[in-house]
Length: 465
Image (tube, rainbow, N blue to C red; front, side, top):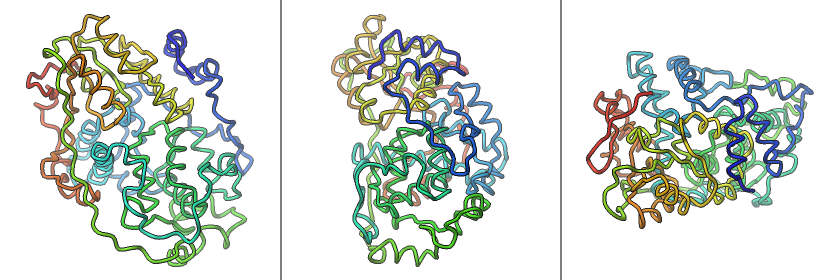
């Protein structure tokens, strides 16, 4: 599949309400599989619609957060979750911005600590991704517990893809994922656990499937979370039982279930462990992951004074650190064919990304290899360098390194979420949180809000908005 200029322009110009339909019409080879009907016979299209990716919608959602209620109810599927992850993933909202809003709402840091700690998980995943690169796509550790049965076929089972497993909970989770591109965190954990430990689907297969459909799909948090569930990046595998499911869904799946009393997740945790694993959890040496060095690129010539701002999937917004640092510079986003081939994004994912792009004033959008397109567009626009927001993505980093051999590339860091100077090990989140907790619970200093950090020591004024 390829996106030519005319197709890109048509999608960007489509009204937001029609963007998904426009994508389906213009990209027929990428049309998602039919949404399976619900097990209960209801209309699956009554579920929540895909949100818009624009900044105004993101700010409205941010204004509605309730950190106290979030801490009390976040584990419940109907709880007061923020729903901000799609905008955070693409840089429309920053971690620091969400943290600052949470602290301002409650006045006391301890009232917002649970929400801030969850933001820290995303920051942690990004740091691990930057440290390990593409190693996040293979087992970070040996499995914490040996499975009782062999790993199944590499492909996702057909009954899962069609939401016809016979388990109302699992089928409902699949329907919601395919229809909306969103799942509550508990639903993600339950579905991943059942697939990995009960159906013996390789965690990478499940993680890739999630990444295709989730509109907040981010390899760092997605694939490392699947490894956390699988026990290949955690002290033990994650399993759940019916009581856990029932408690946090108010019995909505279990009460009417015909499998009640003999379903796949029936029994105590000890029963489930004995059923699923051949031996107790293995004691492994403590995992140590050194934190990554700051990402810097040697310029290929003189210091850039008018760079082209290269927007990436981590920063598709006018509030991108690079765009904010160079407010008068032209902006460019490049759809990389290698990314399309690797992640095969669903139409819902693409619709959200195009929403983000349509909200960036005067942004150019192109299809092709960024190593070729970015320097070509920079020179055509009279730019003498490239500015890009910091990202852990190995594909972007490799492309930026190739560009830097020809043009100066400046990496612009986001507003700081926490002080990582005391972090010396990323082996476990608990160690990371202990090091950054106090600074993560402080609002952003006014000086940092006014001037983004540019590594050559010459911060540029930040454009408001």
